[in-house]
Amino acid sequence: MNASNTNAIKNFLTQNAIYVVLVVLIIGIALSDPSFLAITTLRDILLQSSTRAIIALGAAFILITGGVDLSAGRVVGLTAVISASMLQLSEYPQKFFPDLPQLPIIVPIALAILAGLIVGLINGVIVAKLSVPPFIATLGTMVIVYGVNSIYFDTEPNQSQPIGGLRKDFTELGSGYFGLDGKYSIPYIVVIAIAVAALVWVIFNKTQLGKNMYAIGGNIQAAKVSGIRVGRNLIYIYSIAGALYGLAGVLEAARTGGATNNYGNMYELDAIAACVVGGVSTAGGIGTVPGVMAGVMIFGVINYGLTYIGVNPYWQLIIKGLIIVAAVAFDIRKYLAKK
Image 1 (cartoon, rainbow, N blue to C red):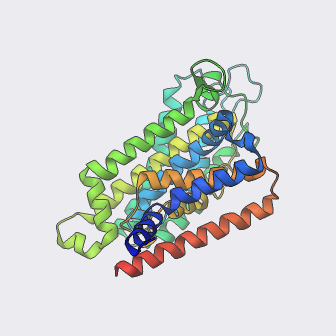
Image 2 (cartoon, rainbow, N blue to C red):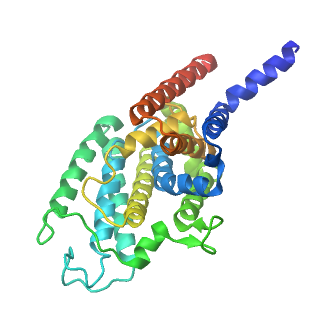
């Protein structure tokens, strides 16, 4: 093999490392248990990964600007509780709101997403207008949101009891399928996640906001000099991310058929890890939607696949940690090479 072919292979592996890792993981698990390649297994992985994908897409907005959002998981919990509390069966004996009439399903969903957007808006204002570093700003809102959610969750007559008895038209969003029942049916929640990914791809690649986002993450001072209104754009970006977390919280409640104030705990770390593994640079300015989705799928395959073949959960944590460290080290090497 000559030098040019070697370089071509090296460049291919460098540019597509995330997809190579995903394929290797799938092949490795399939060699241990060939039934892992069944269509139903893939559907289950996609089903479990759908809400995580939406959260990761929201986190990608922030990471590409050079920031980080630690409030994502708690926003998921808040919006899961808000939507579930207003979408219980009328005959359920432990209703969160005993006198609340049956609302059109879109109303609680819209209110929950709006709540997520408002938290994102607050994050954006704190970062853009008060010049608080994103890590500190979102750490503060993470704690505040959890406190607000816990107070709401503890109100009479619920008093911190898990919210259940959700309406079927709501739980169908998380457990229903397009097509006939069977292995070829497609879950609604997967289609929603794909649609969100497509919309985010358009924002990233075809809108002025997307161009500004990459410019801010690449060099914020240069972005300011070029006339980009950095503060306004950051507020928009954090608000969109918050709305995506809100949607993910709604779908998580629908998927699991209930909610508590502890929903979403640590989801932000999984989302950030998926983004980093998927090629979103920790230095800002770099990241793609396909990469984020591949990162989510890698952790979906790890969580589901290694459990499928009986790997000890503690070993799964070690494997996930090694992949995260390797991805960040690889990202830093690329960044230094470009510098």
